[in-house]
Image 1 (cartoon, protein in one colour):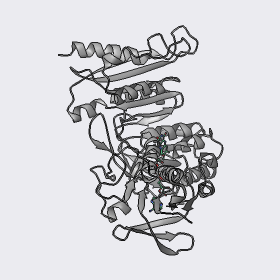
Image 2 (cartoon, rainbow, N blue to C red):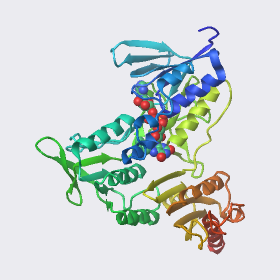
Image 3 (cartoon, rainbow, N blue to C red):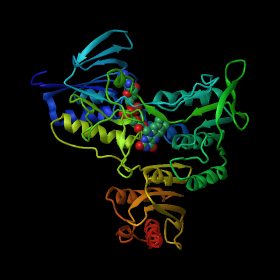
Image 4 (cartoon, rainbow, N blue to C red):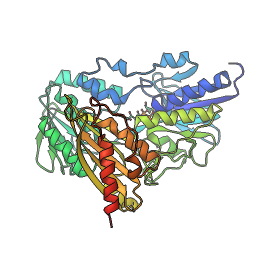
Length: 459
Ligand SMILES: Cc1cc2nc3c(=O)[nH]c(=O)nc-3n(C[C@H](O)[C@H](O)[C@H](O)COP(=O)(O)OP(=O)(O)OC[C@H]3O[C@@H](n4cnc5c(N)ncnc54)[C@H](O)[C@@H]3O)c2cc1C
C-alpha cells in the first residue's frame, strides 16, 4: 500500500470496533492502514435483535448483520475473522494474535490500538449450569444455538434467569413460541433499572400476559435427567420445572487483555478513557463500547452502561480522532428502552436510589395519562414518573411504563436532562400535538407541571 503513514489495529469486530475502523478509514483513506481482529465468525451485527429473531419477528440471523467481513474488506479494512488477540505489548507497540483455524501465531505492530472487546455474560458457577438446555443470548451463535435447541428439545416450560431488559425480552420471545415462561429474579421487581414502584407495573403486566414472575428469588442450581438435560431450576423459593433455561444475568466488561497490559480500570471493572476515548495515560491506545466505563452526566459518577447506542458513538468518536478529525464522548444520561409484548418500558437519568446515593434532595411525581387525545380511537394508557431536585427543580430522571406509543416520549426527558433543564422550564416545551399523537398536554408536560408544583411545595 503506498502513502500509508500510520497503522490502526482494532481488537473486536462488532459495534465499537468496526465503527471506529470505518470512520477512521473514511477520513484518512490510504494514509491509514486499518487492521481489525475478531475472534468470532460475525462482524458488525446487532445482538439487540436476538430476542426478535428468537420470537420470529426477524426471519434469519443474517439479517442482523449490518456489515459482513467482505463488505468491510471492500472498504479497505483488513478484517481478520476467527482471529484471537492474545496479548498486547505496549512498549513494543505490537499485539500477539492467533489464527483460530490454523493455530498460527504471529505479531502485528500498531501506531494506534483500539480495544473494543465488549463484555462477557455473568454466569455464576451454579451446580448443573453447563447442562444441556441452558443457553446464553450474548452472540449471534448463541441465538442460533437457542433456536436449534428450541427445535430439538421442543420445550414446554422455560425459566429465564434475570428480569432485566434482556430477560424480559427473552421471556416474550419464548412465550410467543408457545413455551410457558417463568422469570426468576433476585430483585424485588423485574426491570431493576426502574424504581420498584414502576417495576411493579411491569411485573403486573407480565403476569397478565401469562408470564410467571418470581421476584426476591435466587437460583441455586439446575437439576438434570439421566441424559444431562435440564429438568428443573432450584431456587430459594423451591424448584421450578423447566425443559430450557435462558441466562439473562447481565454482563461485565471484557478487560482481560487491557488488564494484562496494565491499562487503567475503574471501580466497575471497565477501561477508563478521556473524552476522546483515549485510554488514560496511553496516547496510542483507545477503547470504546461495552469494555469501558462512562461518565453519568447527571450523577457525575462513572458507570458501566453496556448498550449498543453508546458503543456505536464511541466507535465514531475514536474513528474521528484517529482519522485526523476531532470528536468527544461527554458521557451518558442513562437512557434505555425495551418492551414486553405491547408494554413499553423506558427510563432516563437517576432512579430514586441513585439520587439518594449521589446526595441529591429530590421530589417525585407519578402521573397517569394517555398516548392520544382521550376521545381518539386507540389511545393507550401510560404512567410517567419524574424526579426533580428539591429547591432548584433540575430534572434528575424520568421513567415511563405504558402501551404502544409511550416509550419514545422518554427522549424528550433525556434531551431535557442533557441540557440541565428544570421541570419548570420543561412545562413550556413546544412539543407536537394533534389528537392522533398526544393529548393536548403531552404526558411529559403533565409530569413536568406536577413536578414543578411539587418542587415549589417542597420544604
Ligand atoms: C440480547 C441482547 C439484546 C440487546 N439489546 C440492546 C438494545 O436493545 N439496545 C442497546 O443499546 N443495546 C442492546 N444490547 C447491547 C449491545 O448489543 C452491546 O452494547 C453492543 O454489542 C456492544 O458493542 P461492542 O462492540 O462494545 O461489543 P461486542 O458487541 O460484544 O463486540 C466485541 C467483540 O470483540 C470480540 N473480541 C473480544 N475479545 C477479543 C480478542 N481478544 N480478540 C479478538 N476478538 C475479540 C468479541 O468476539 C466480540 O465480537 C443488547 C445485547 C444483547 C446480548
